[in-house]
Length: 108
Image (tube, rainbow, N blue to C red; front, top):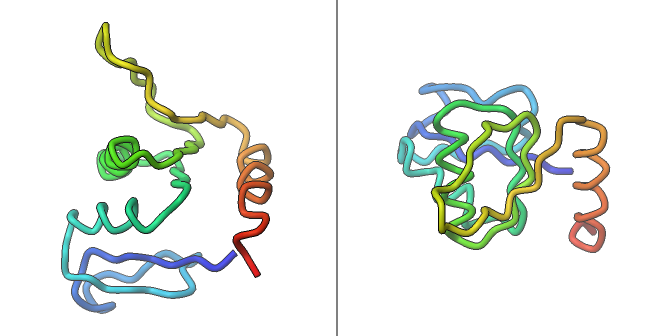
């Protein structure tokens, strides 16, 4: 699929996207760009990650987005809270197959 990078800096000179990004969109928003990443998606796919990835997963859950996470952090909600709608993958091939199946009809 087409990869789009919503970047924290105001220009590409402030930090290049990784090699997989085909369209880079500098925002100048810093960490606030995580909300754009989440709200622009129907399905959020997280790969490993640090605190920024965890914040995107939390935002996605609060926004009612599906989250599929390969090699996730392991978290349990407090007693009495509902479980998060996060599908966990430990096998990247299974994750990629699920993403391809979910994207059927979205990509033209």
